[in-house]
Image (spheres, helix red, strand yellow):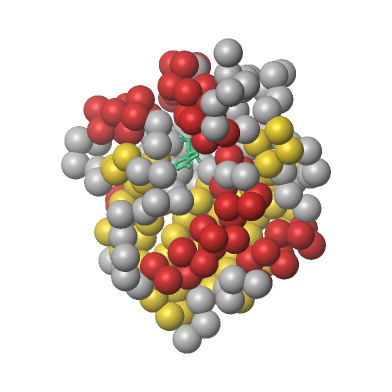
Length: 208
Ligand SMILES: C[S@@+](CC[C@H](N)C(=O)[O-])C[C@H]1O[C@@H](n2cnc3c(N)ncnc32)[C@H](O)[C@@H]1O
């Protein structure tokens, strides 16, 4: 049934189908600040404008707003955005594909993307980083996490099956980020931090 669908549509359908499962799991957990978010946040000016890309139900968006930042959350899964809005009606959550963002100028001080770029085909990621570069002020900061490894595809055994997942290797990812002019400040493999398994944490800066 799913095999004919484009990868992003398939992934979002999987999240819509299993949104209860995802939300139940996240509601069970006490919010802990991802260590990379802390590190990224330490570079950002007070009250700066931020983008949470692939924000899901917006737990990081909410946290950042509470810290005094101005922040937009963007995601394609409507059920997640609705859940975020139910909890915090004033949270600015926008439904959009991260490849077609409704912003056009270098207005953000920082962009955060936790576990969302893993859902993009690798051939789209370079274009995304280029676009994020143009949306970030000179001296601004990008931080994101992706799954570590080599597998690419639509695993059936995941807790939310039928999502497209692309894992990344350090060298490949660093090269991809750097070729889009970002300066990579940190790229580190971590295990069982805010998410189970091996992940890559990346912090990059748009040069002045
Ligand atoms: C694993 S969840 C992570 C959500 C949140 N960032 C977090 O840390 O809990 C991945 C998110 O990426 C979103 N996503 C996947 N592809 C997307 C796309 N092309 N544009 C916007 N959001 C997308 C999904 O809807 C989902 O909410």
